[in-house]
Length: 261
Image 1 (tube, helix red, strand yellow):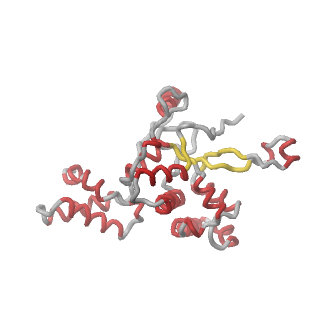
Image 2 (cartoon, rainbow, N blue to C red):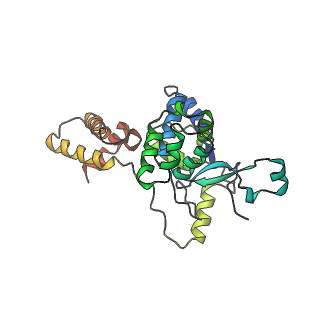
Image 3 (cartoon, rainbow, N blue to C red):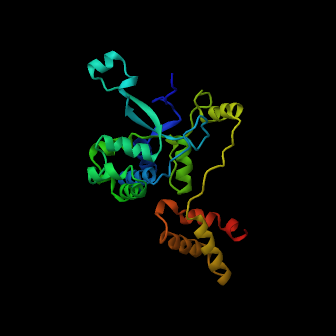
């Protein structure tokens, strides 16, 4: 029997619940801001992960609840039209397809249906989903996005990258838990002979940020580092989406590393 994700795995949390915790931890943020940030990250592929047998901490795939195919249902379930559901591991392509099948995406449904499966048009669909406010999604789509499950390890790393608050509720599972990330990591390391993880990829705009910092610093070494970080981030935002650009605080924290490389 296939090993499907458990809906009570303590290492995972729904995006909706995570958004609630983040807003509770930072009163300057609104629930709308956080859920919009999550929606953009999902459809921009920022939470995509390898869909293999080994699960490395911080690289776990997203999980979404889907109605079980008829072939997996019992005769009784089929007769009673129970529509049982199960969690499946997916990336943005399959998540968008599942939500589309439930009429949960905004826009022309006939065009979405065609463009999802046309290589030259698929990116336009995801740009559309990233740029369409979550409030424009049908109610069922908003609920399905809120119910997407993400590993706490992965979410904490992502929040840290963006200098967002990491509330206590996102802490790791108890050390004695058999489903804790460390236990999974150790088991995978013992049994896997394949390539080891490469670590968390950095945000796309870092290269542009480093180049701008180095260029301005060489021209004026007396320039305050805080002003330099602010300017470098502003320049990066002209070419990259906000979720691809490190925060000013992060740039400033890594300024020594940038200037001495």
